[in-house]
Image 1: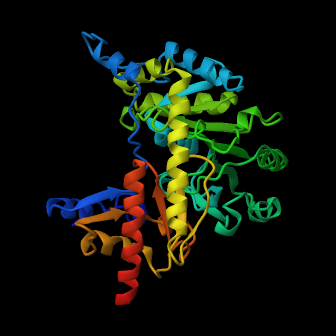
Image 2: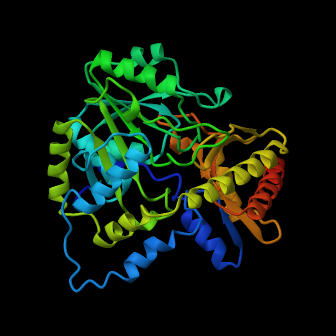
Amino acid sequence: MPNISKKGVAMPLSPIRKLVPYAEKAKKEGVKVFHLNIGQPDIKTPKIALNAIKNSNLDVLKYSRSEGSETYRRKLSQYYRKNDIEIDADNIIITTGGSEALLFTFGSIMDLGDEVIIPEPFYANYNGFSIAQGVTVIPILSEIDSNFSLPSISDFEALITPKTKAILICNPGNPTGYLYSKDEIRELAILVKKHDLFLIADEVYREFTYDGLEHFSIMQQEGIESNAIIIDSVSKRYSMCGARIGCIVTRNKSVLNTALKFAQARLSPPTYGLIASEAALETPTNYFNEVINEYVERRNILVEELNKIDGVIVAIPNGAFYCIAELPVSDTDNFAQWMLEKFRLNNQTIMVAPAAGFYSTKGLGKNQVRIAYVLNKEDLKTSAAILKAAITEYNSQC
């Protein structure tokens, strides 16, 4: 029998989705499963986006331009300008989700064996993207005790080698919810400028910042015009995960020209997704105000309820809609699977994402989980009560 590739063997299972079969089995048995494992918001998609698809009246579902339609890119550049990011339409390449944007970026700036430094824990799929492109992730640890703030610049500098090509951050962070400050972005800018590196920022949660804090984009930082690359997406901003529209944003023409070759090789981003995403840019500001207020309330309830559980430590997120919680169990992979298979409270259970999959360093995150507060407030309270009861029963059996 022919063998599969070493690359395929090395591809990690998603900590977000690998327990889905157990959740589906529980549902078939009549169990209510609260999904805290995935960032699929229950917030309604703006009607203006959905109506654009319904009213499109296309006679032929054609390919779009490989870089995305000019009208969408022009309107998208106006969106960035409203957020104090001076960008033209020619600085944007539309992709099939933020995932493809990062794949194209890795392919454009890194060769086989090159290295990218990423603060961990980080979005789990970064591991998969790097393996797919033959890139080596060099993790740098951020700690729950410091709310996952940026590690020291001296620690970053100690990891830079001749193979280092980029530093990648997610801001606000998935899975931590940490929002990097303007000073932290400035420190990173000085570092990448000094060592002639790219600074890649996954900014898909830009709108979702709390407690009076404001997002500062790497594209607002002066002096790194040739170094800065933004990864962006409509998925979370407009609750349009299924549209699969993202983009690469950079002022570096060489990166854009190279990424365009990858874009042309896959022909085009999805046409209906482009139609919906262009319309979504007309979403009223009050939509975001209401959504942000809702997420703040959800975060506050979740953190409050988690803090009531003995032995649980939770980092307080100030952006996105995730938090990392440290639990008084030895292995959250086993614990998460056990909850789906064997634990029921009033015929209900929860699904969480074991945090070890968000680390690159083996052994880290074994007693942590990522929780997405994308459920309504009552369901979050119920989920916290289930978690508390599950921890007690699980530990009594160990």
